[in-house]
Length: 419
Ligand code: HAM
Image 1 (tube, rainbow, N blue to C red):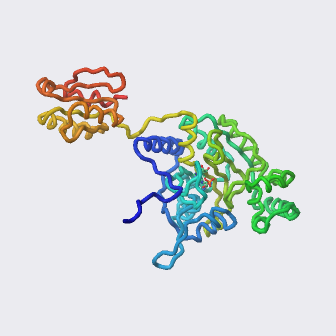
Image 2 (image 1 turned 180 degrees about the vertical axis):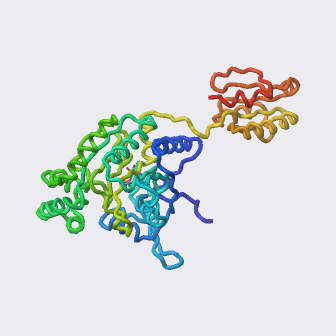
Image 3 (image 1 turned 60 degrees about the horizontal axis):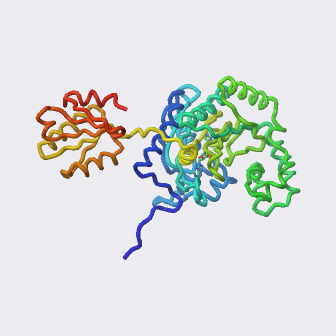
């Protein structure tokens, strides 16, 4: 006999009733982007491998070690998307969205795939809510994007998180900084693989989490020491707008981020309740990305918020969100004539947009009431012979146990505004 089937390693599954919290968190994370005029974009879950190699960068762990890459039936190299920004750029270029006015503001949500070593909060299929604002150099949009991420986390109810902020410089000042860092790293005691990284993209080494590497980096030159005048002005203005928006942050001069496309503003949100995988969201500017993918010279900025980790952070803070799919009522028919009334009422309630279910299979009252409790509904609507004779249902509040007879015709109205 074949062994029992299991989900792939490192892939979280969200099952009812806990999945209600997952949906609620994802919805809360996405709401501020919608309110700020970002349009929804649904993207392919797999793309040509070359898009990620060119867009995200071959020196990153994400591309060099963690991509799920395969050859399809047409001998093309395909990869499951490890992140969303490169795909958004590809789509904007392909469909000429930038010709319809700037900035192009888009948001997305869905699964991304990284073959990382699984641990608490680090998964091989991870969920993000992300957004991108393309074609504006205005520091006010940097502040807007960061403030949206901040209100997304606030909307979930999180309090125990920190926004870390840095500027990474631009095509003008970055080369001087990279060279200084490369020279510094050449004198450090690093293994061959790390030296090779230092040659390819020295900023990657700053992001190395190993203690023996970090120890040697205490005196390393930092991006902030090399910013050109334009980058300094941009960063100062971004911070001024953030202050106007009431967003608080800490300066993080060593923050570099794990993907290669970042320029200027870079940020990360970390949560105190998560342990090693503390990043609940991050993003930044990527001013050369569009052009490097064959598109127009347009700047951009965006973020990705981790839904799985935000859910863990919410649990760590003891936050429970209202489940968007929670039922309002559960019908309990007692006897065959009552089942006919219940099925009709169920149809009417659902047509009116009210979430409801009923006890099937002619259950006795005890089993049916148990099912009502388990359903998560606020009210049980009990229908027996007496109720049919009176043209009513018995509406029982499943939280406080209070019940009252309600006329059948009044039921949809009563349920409509129900908590
Ligand atoms: P990222 O920092 O790689 O950025 O990912 C964003 C968020 O996704 C992280 O802060 C984390 O919460 C979540 N995440 C990443 N990897 C995992 C994992 N293995 N398990 C669980 N959660 C994870 C990006 O992906 C960029 N595309 C963000 C961006 C958009 N930058 C500009 N625009």
